[in-house]
Image 1 (spheres, rainbow, N blue to C red):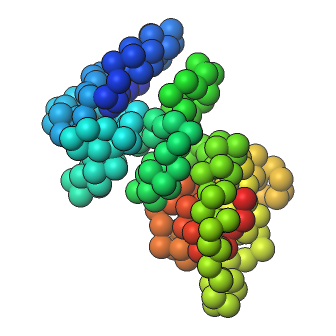
Image 2 (cartoon, rainbow, N blue to C red):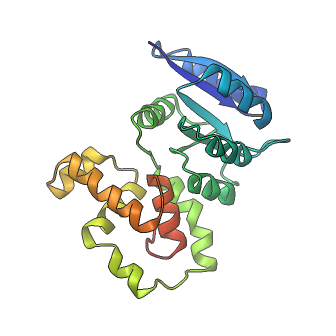
Length: 216
């Protein structure tokens, strides 16, 4: 069975470009598309895609508003952010809403499929070169002090895992580096999520950086 991808972007050229790339892989099909969030919401509910490629800056209902609406409807379809290099604040908010990763609109074919595969596995794929840029300006402007209690909450091993996922490492790679099983890595991730009050890798990185726990 093919993986159904839904594309939300207000630029026809972007949608067509992504469709052309997706058509080169027999494992994927474009289930539908929309140029703004309100239309996307009704179509997503009707078509039940496996993954969503979501532009953030759109007229009408924005990508962020659409993600919030999906969360309110308890729709857990993984969302991958489509972005440009000048949308740092939007990306941070998107990650905080639980996006499974992000792609530049001119991304390579290889990177598109790699990010889709990670999202479908329930993982978050963060690209280190983009992650560092996203948070760089914010860290320069303000690095809030880390409360002592919060510092002690995150163990040394958990900090290593946080740093690893911020670099885009997968659970398998982290397990190898630490000499533990993937199941143990996932258990540590669950502990990290609980301590930070988040639900995903992207949220964990976003919250950790904003609180000054993690420095990229």
